[in-house]
Image (cartoon, rainbow, N blue to C red):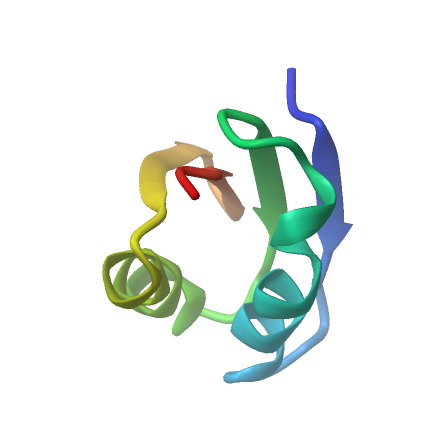
Length: 72
């Protein structure tokens, strides 16, 4: 279960990551954000964004559903 789910299907790179960057602070520290994305670039972009922003990439829990834990 996640605290926020972002439906970014149909968006091309870099829009899913931009949406994540704008909205992840809506969840409390320790909260989970799911990003639904069908752009293949999301598979590398979302973990890279997490590394750059100090957030935790939980994983791709099912195809096209990327989960991030807010760390700060």
